[in-house]
Image (cartoon, rainbow, N blue to C red; front, side):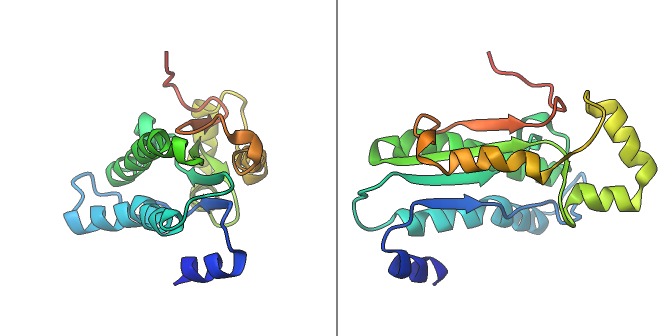
Length: 185
């Protein structure tokens, strides 16, 4: 319903920014199927359905940007088992869909942030709940020695939402302050 209203009001949607997601405290190593389904629906399924609704219909006049916020957990396995699975699925979806839709003037991209703070996000809750382990995380995982914040991620999101991102189809940009250890050759 929301996508239908947006299409009617805007006539043509230029950008969709997907930011929903999280682990929602589901940390069981042997995750239950129902819990995994919840994580997949929130982190991946919602984006798939919204994209389908936005794309369906008419031929595009303008470039459409579908931008997704993933996580370095997609290839670093730094979160819970369920979260890692969900974010890996999102990364595969962005890469695959990006290749498939490029010819239709649809640029599918995303970012893979590492730990950062924002109002009430996971890292902010971690800091408040266990400041000692939070400081240890920074010392052992962040080479620059301090936690980033959402303001440092916004410029990349703005770029991916802009017309200048047309060469980024299927790309996922890590923004992790050196936290990640995986690299592509």
